[in-house]
Length: 164
Image (cartoon, one colour):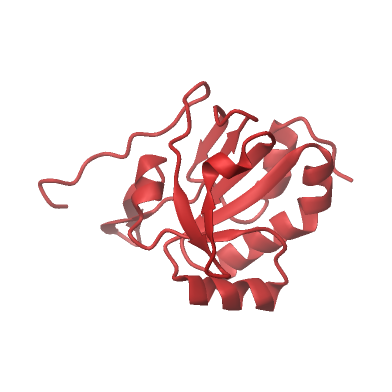
């Protein structure tokens, strides 16, 4: 790790979520502030079209109707370019926005970028994380190092939503 490497500061319940504007899979800008008024699930994933990230995205897609009916909207964020997000969205028939955080500044602001260890190697990268915001952009739930498989089911349970 470099000398300037800093430990990611993680968000916690009660924190105001940092605002951001990122480009979506269609090349349109989306600002977090434009999503106010509804509860928002912001999830950070490492890379589109990888097995774990595909499983997680499809789980959100398959649960979207019930999440929406409970007052939640979903936004996924990764370091991928918009063109890669567009292919992923089309292939997996995703019906919620995926946003490109190519310089990982938003992930860093949310505590979702930092030191990772994999197969004995230490490096900086995206930490699979989910942040649930209330209607005013205040953090209700912050979960870090989540598993791709089963995460949406666990999140629904944590939010008190019944599985339909």
